[in-house]
Image (cartoon, rainbow over all chains, first blue to last red; front, side):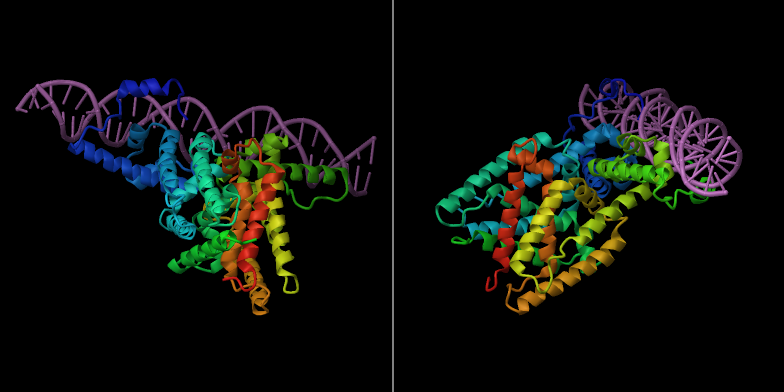
Length: 228
Length: 228
DNA sequence: TTTCAAACTGACCAATTGGTCAATTTCAAT
DNA sequence: ATTGAAATTGACCAATTGGTCAGTTTGAAA
């Protein structure tokens, strides 16, 4: 692991990979490299978890020297955090359609479709997130307790409002989201299992459609006003 | 990692940890140690994943010398496989209630309750399994393609039979199980997230009950004969 | 064109870790 | 009581890996 003596100081003493210049050639090249590293890191972390990933693997996939990766991102843990931040940002941005003035059926349908689409298009992101939580969210617990919790509280208010107005049946909003996340993300996180069971080499568009359709049907049947 | 030269041979040359004697003192002591190691390994693998786990951690938790662990189980990978096998066995044993002659509503209710109870009582097992699949099931793909697939095919026949007899609405059985597994296992695999969102230090009995109740309600609403 | 801080990287190192083994202890069988 | 195969374990090692750094290159600014 190399000497642990104030890594921060010696780092700063050498150079500061801060402040990407501007629209200079250097700035452009740098942004390009950073993006490639982040993408590579996401793939590797998704495939192997934090502990299983090596900075050498990530650098190789990004096609840059390992020392360069450390020059840009510092430690493996810091790089991992950057990857997580990007993912959580996207995660929190979904669900905008769930608003008091929206039509519940439409809002649920679109939300589910978007989540399934995310599982299909960015499975790596979903898996990195899943892996982090699976192992106790050591790097994310603050985010979960703050941003995610707030997100859920806000959505719970919306669902309760819908229920009060008789638009949907009353439902435990928190657990509803737990189940919704699990159901939609399973198409990314557990893809290996679904492929094996379905006997597919790769999941097809129809598989994702079938999942979205079933989950939507389940939610609508559960929440349909007057239900149980 | 130590010399890779035929580990198998040198191992055999030293001794063979096969054939647990009988009800001798040694036999008993051995079974005890093996059980402690397997339990410790399950916890550690669940908490850190395969790559993040060290045999030293597992040995420490099992309170035996590391060399002893290797004496009993060979390599870390072999120990991991033993842990996985136990877990998958239990996994496949669930769902016995889903039989042609069973009442669908009762069968679903019991299956969901059992899965949630498993998430509550054996969260480690669920997490080891989840971690394995999340990373592409490198050690499990054969099992998934054989045992699990067969399991699902059999259950799909049962559900189709129920539908044909008008006991439930027609439904895509495969995807129904995907969603059911995800929804119930999330109470173990994503416990850290649920705790954060619910603002709990530990999930309570009531939380598991709420989850089971909602999932049951969803499945029954979806499958109720005559539904959509 | 000159300059020099920033960018870059090959080579290296210390810590960690999976696994081994020689030497010792235990105990089931005789 | 004797015996030897099995069980046990402290000490060790080679491979891996995160991270560093000295030396070189690059390009923006003067």
